[in-house]
Amino acid sequence: MARTGRRPGGGSGTQDAILDAARAAFSESGYDGATIRGIAGQAGVDPALVHHYFGTKEQLFVATTELPFDPAVVIPALIEPGLDGLGERIVRMLLSVWDTAGPYNPFIALLRSAVTHEKAAAMFREYATQAIFGRIVQAIDADRPELRTAMVASQMAGLVMTRYLIKLPAMVEAAPDELVAGIGATVQRYLTEPLGLPND
Amino acid sequence: MARTGRRPGGGSGTQDAILDAARAAFSESGYDGATIRGIAGQAGVDPALVHHYFGTKEQLFVATTELPFDPAVVIPALIEPGLDGLGERIVRMLLSVWDTAGPYNPFIALLRSAVTHEKAAAMFREYATQAIFGRIVQAIDADRPELRTAMVASQMAGLVMTRYLIKLPAMVEAAPDELVAGIGATVQRYLTEPLGLPND
Image (cartoon, rainbow over all chains, first blue to last red; front, side):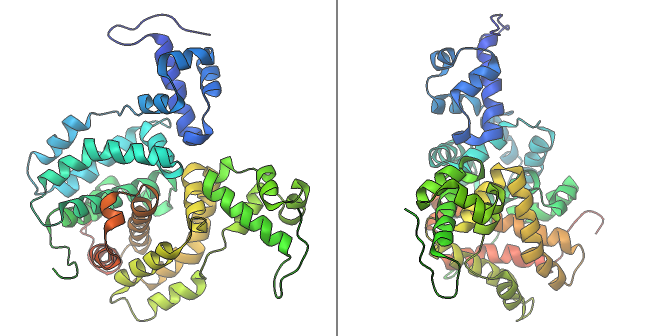
């Protein structure tokens, strides 16, 4: 059943219902598995209305990747106190966002799609490079800032994957403070310490 | 067109053709996206024959996860020289397997499925715990061996994800020796060094 009421300060209830249904579909089925028809059915609207408001499935996907925080605010705030302790702050921020997110976490949808679909992977790379990695690269005061930032991304991606997607028991059972200390030290090393690369 | 010839020392050509088609389908479409009908079509056989030889899609998936090396041989061989340098040896082995694998790498199919499908995630956990993690846990001579092994898994999963699936440019362009040194040190710390956990 289509909803037509408007919320103050935002899009129509119908658009919100479509976005909610799309987030659920991408999260559950990934980019390939989700269909406009299924999303429309879940939102109680005609598929034509989904196309009217959001265009293609790809454009609808981009519209759903709205994050629970604004990296343009959060990343500078993490960096602002200085490089000291930045590794632990990054891990703590990531855990606080993911541990409190519901089952329709847009991060999970984004990551699942990026792993299974080349176009979504490209979107993830572009988004993360602009919104997150670029700001960290600029803050690094050491050699190979791009490689260092990518190594940070690799440890963060693996943390998300093993704790929230594959759910390895030891990762799920670990206390946040344990992961902040144990994995934060890795991130700190990637950010500020010698990497010990060949020819260094 | 069904193939009926037999190869020396192995299953029939038909079974091999089905497994090849299934690996390609799971790799391209993930666990949910692949269908018995599509796999049968690709292998040139009737879907009923796929069910006859391999049972359900789930059983077929398990049959395709045959790895390009035997962890029962490789993991003990990595551990055998001792804990010294084990972090670098693990990273080097992973890179050598993935860098040389073709586009239908069964690892990629396994990982994609584990990320998008709860049943595949459970299969991945069970498989990896038995074949890989359990052997590393036993080799660790330090506190919290399960958490340490899970942390190793998190960094390895993130390395695979950022280099082979999401393809972050700095990770794709990094020389294997750079990743062996830079990320191997992280793995070594997780295996043998103090983690700096709270209450340590």
